[in-house]
Length: 81
Image (cartoon, rainbow, N blue to C red; front, side, top):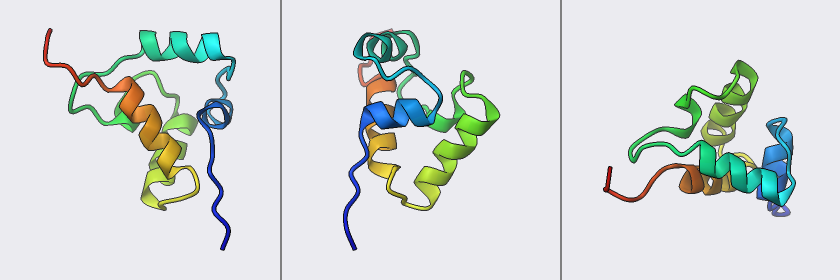
């Protein structure tokens, strides 16, 4: 079985978002979540995006690693308010 390493750019496209570097950076800056948040529970996902993120994680699909990468970029790791 071959390994299909999806990219962050492909994930943004799959979610219907721009995959241009500047747009990805802006999205990450503007959509930060608090530590302990669950990515798919963020209020800014539409129902289809949320369902995709849940399915990607539940099935340990080809998307799961890049979804984890997105979560790491969006969920704040610092403890300062």
